Image (cartoon, rainbow, N blue to C red; front, side, top):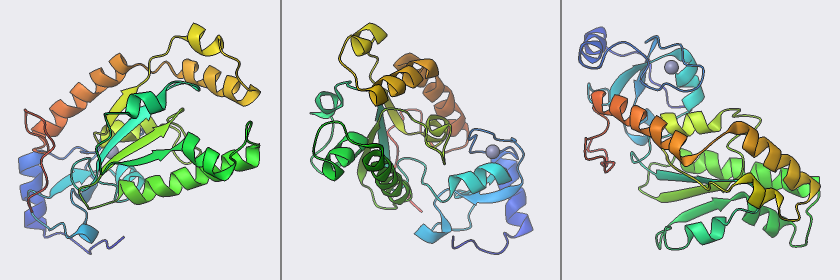
Length: 236
Ligand SMILES: [Zn+2]
């Protein structure tokens, strides 16, 4: 998308000297090799060919990123995940700002099928709507605040979406509901399947926070986060 021909070899040498030649993205499946020049602020958002705006990336990650922004360089992205029947709405209350955008899988299902026990067709349509909204907002160059809400951080297109979110430094919140609480409620067969998959993933806030701290450290070394961590708006 709006990919420009080539970077001046002298500029590339400067980028490598300043930031290193291993992949900055570290998406799931990263080969670590600096194979391509990647714009932090995408070229399509007016990102320039400068040492500040360029890092090296592997082919795999560059293709997987698809011009999604690093959180804060355009949209700021939050994600809220948890097992079925977790109190997503309660958690969001008071956390989403007045101008916040919320993309909730459950709300989309309810809009499409406002009756109990939505059929698979309605759930699939909601999944596609969620995915479309995500792809649009994840690339957004405006400083909007986005909350992505769903149960499993997994789609057909993104089998390890959580890993991708963390690579792009999303603010991930996990509703750590104990299995007894979830399975102690009357679940539909679909919810029960989803709940089993959720607990099999072994995701917890602690795990997510530990990975985030690691990622933040690396992003700081890459000049993309300041130690005090409020994601600065890109100034170039
Ligand atoms: Zn990579």
